Amino acid sequence: MFPQKNVTCPNAKLCLTWEIERWVLDCHRGTCVNCAIHFGRELKFTSEESECPVCLEKTTNNIFHPSGCRHIFCVACVRRLFFPEREDTSKEYGAPQERDFPDCEAFEEAWDAWIETEIGQLWNAIDCEDELAFQDSAIKECPICRSKKEPDWKSGCGNWCKPPP
Image 1 (spheres, rainbow, N blue to C red):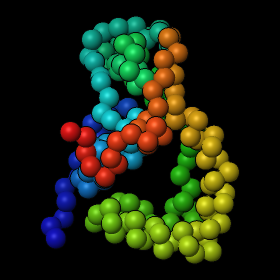
Image 2 (image 1 turned 60 degrees about the horizontal axis):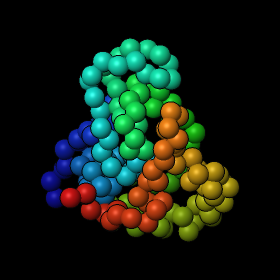
Image 3 (image 1 turned 180 degrees about the vertical axis):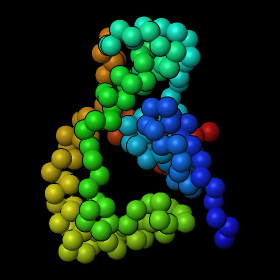
């Protein structure tokens, strides 16, 4: 097997995932893991100058709100809205990390074996305490119109091992 080249998440301006192995994007519908969890798709950015309704700064680094409404915000404000709340602590417990495996199947096999260990069970028990709060936080509404869009994984739509058409 040839080593895969690193690529950039299409939402990198927001999620800051500038370098990731190609197979990770293939496993998460064309985005990095964080974007797959929060949005389930590539987002729409614009370089049109506008004033962010949250911070009131004029900028050309803007994004349409991920809910699908047409409100435009600066990338920094949307990043603070979507990515502040959850830290992955599994690495501290010795969990396998996706970047260390050549493909999805190898990672999933290693993860399944690790989660059955005593330390994996301990991490899972601690992590599950916050899971309901995390799932609720994955639905972010537009601060202007209160429009919401559930990510595909939460609504049950979509095929999570194939990139979108």
